Image 1 (tube, chains in turn cyan, green):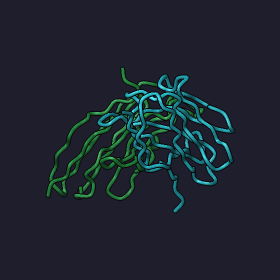
Image 2: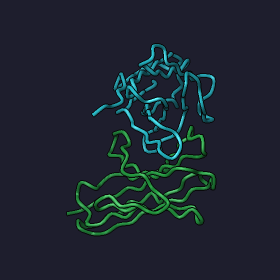
Image 3: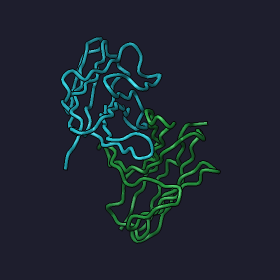
Image 4: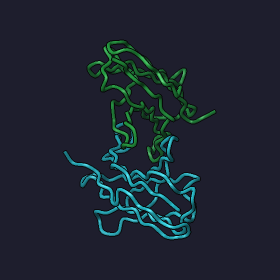
Length: 115
Length: 111
């Protein structure tokens, strides 16, 4: 069964450092998403991406964050200068459709720890 | 009012019991509705979509009430493996770019 893959599974970084989280969505999917989940809290929407541009972003997705689809298969989330409060599990997701048929398929996540 | 609201639980029920969860959403323009389950420290996984006419998948039944803006999930004959957090998920508008998760309802099935 096709799946969304994320690397690395764990990332430890120092506050102020840049991190890039990588995702390979399911190959025929067109819509890509990043979510995060702080330990013990709910899954929060960060950003959606379609046709090589951001479709929607939340208040969390400020200027520190950026997304890119550099080569037609990878979908990356960059955090420019990490803060302690960026520590969370980051989930990438993709879907084939939008509207009433879209279903999200999630990767297994990258656990980011900012020290 | 929260965009998507759920009773956090935990619901602690014996194996074989029937359990029901509700979820309310605030945006009347919401288009699509889903239930996901999430095991501890794992990714959310789609359980089922929720259709206006209601739908059933084995032991699971989902209902949508647009007038009252709530969604329900019923689990019959619960199994130990049903223990998880159940997430109510709502697509906020017709563009489907913003899909919002509830905080989840924790379910624990005891032998």
